[in-house]
Length: 46
Image 1 (cartoon, rainbow, N blue to C red):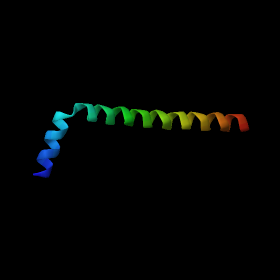
Image 2: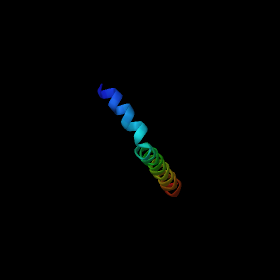
Image 3: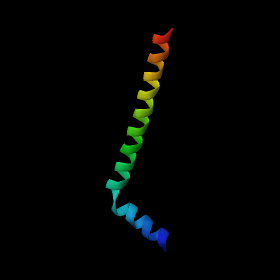
Image 4: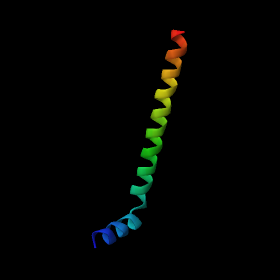
């Protein structure tokens, strides 16, 4: 029964889904930025 309610909640709340998606995108973007910064640092050290 809890799972059914969860499914209904997900269907009712597309905003929550999209906010989760954008949060994942943001996390991925931050990871890329960190990687780029590391690459810059290693290039400068050479």
